Length: 371
Image (cartoon, rainbow, N blue to C red):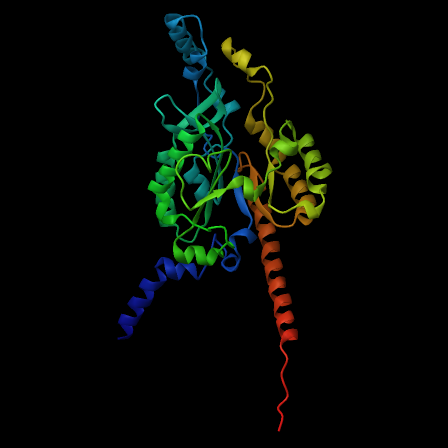
């Protein structure tokens, strides 16, 4: 009998429901926090690794005739430096599954449509874009990972895209449903569940779409509108920041000094800077490939001291931070920064629980007994 009980106990401990009681995103203390009380480690352009420059899209802008334009595309492929796309378009140096294994939990996935209508991971637009694998393959790989890691809550976000919005929105959402539908969390506009409840239900994937992808084409109840949830600093203050000093100044002198009363959405810290080549389209059309500096070098300017300074200054002013997002996270302070913010989140939730308990006790009045 004792042996049977031991076997049953061991089986229960190995089940997802038993795991749900032990840890959420690697920390038991996070299980009692709502999804919107947890800070997540994030990557920028998460699918932008080992991309290939799209010479075909560049050649389609050629007006010199079919034969010459075919030669133009062939010349582009032949003349392309080996590390050109890696240098200018890649923002991470490992694939999304490796990122998941490392602890990244929020993913920013840029997408492009190809001539046959298929949707791929990418970075860039039009004649200045580089392409990666099909997003459907990425979603299938993520689904396998989610199934084998039932205690991990992840978020997939989609915004930048190159192609017809309605067609791409439909394709992305249908692919997500096919691969991850069983794990999609549906909020229906209400309060967010705790991580523990999400884990227990098996609904551990949140999908946020924006720039028309959320509303265009087919609809699923699990779709969250990114623009309704996230207060994104990029177009507001960061778009022209191409070095660490400018990025830090944008946060410390502008974004993080806003009136707290005006803050209503999820706050984020995106410590990313971009290569600035104002004439890159003209250069590419001449089959000239600029390589003055690489994205990985820019990331090195911000992933330690600048990131720490921004977080230390901004987090007390912004309050809850939904994500911290960077490029080339493997050379960074990202995970210690997120752990520090989650320690603060856990303490804040505990303090709020104590205050609520005191209020309830004050409201509880014991009526005297009367003869």
